[in-house]
Length: 399
Image 1 (cartoon, rainbow, N blue to C red):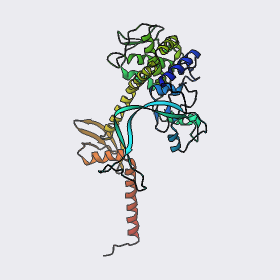
Image 2 (tube, rainbow, N blue to C red):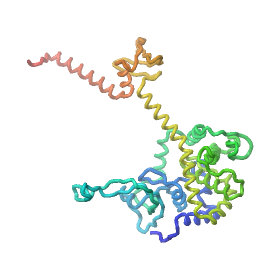
Image 3 (cartoon, rainbow, N blue to C red):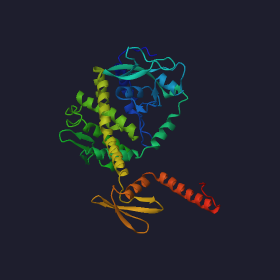
Image 4 (cartoon, helix red, strand yellow):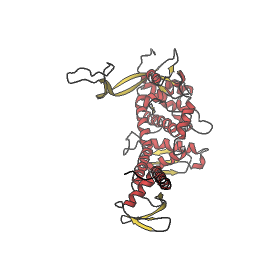
């Protein structure tokens, strides 16, 4: 196990300073040829969650192409094997729950059938910071190939990266102005200024820049309320840029649009100066960057929740345009006026129904459960055939 007992934030600050000077930090990682993300936020494949804040940045600087990390126990649980001699990486995390023995009324452990004590998850009165050692996917045998796992994840997404970025910007309702050759956020007047889209050589770069500025926009006093009024070259200005840059890495990774470091290279010397004087600043910056990420992606989550809620509502009502096969006929649903919904069958017969009517609920059930309707139809046809066969063979019920 690692023997470096310096506080983790000092280890991260030292490594980040060295990589910034060498031009090899996660921020300076080049874009891919197709303008997708060149940086992937470290994640735990056993929980399906990304590492957060300082841990995410720290794990990203360990020199692995595979962004997956897990504990020895998590790997073993999935029947994967950590390579012999593999070096673990230390992370910190906030522990909010603990697993403790389940006790009976006499304070004695409650035992399972195998004689081992039952356990329960207990929420701690005060969260505590603890440590864990994790291994990278490249150090683990039997784990699926990273690219295959990532491609499967991407394939399940409803929106393209550009569509997701566009929706986030729209849902934020931030004022975005276009023109000129600079991209910036103006705190005093609370607007984002961007060059025109056609001035970027790829759509992904436009949206990566826009989302970086949206990260700054999140710091307004009416939102996350960060200090925003310092001038370029000052330590506080560098601190804000560091927060936005870390957040840009996370957002660019999540949306698969990357981040455009070229516009922010001028801040490197300022970041180095701040981190050399205040190593703990990396902890604060990472924590704030995580808040920016959560705030910005929150617009997307809110949209998804609204769509899910609307879908649930739609499942409870007949909606104009629904075409529903039911009881050997096909019904088309029209408009709902004053609680009455117009439905027309294939013969042109129009009926007005409400949720209190049997036909309304039968049509609703048929639309929401088409397989059940088909099975019912098949069962009915089967019974008719059986009755016909019984009559043809002279079958009679015994008395």
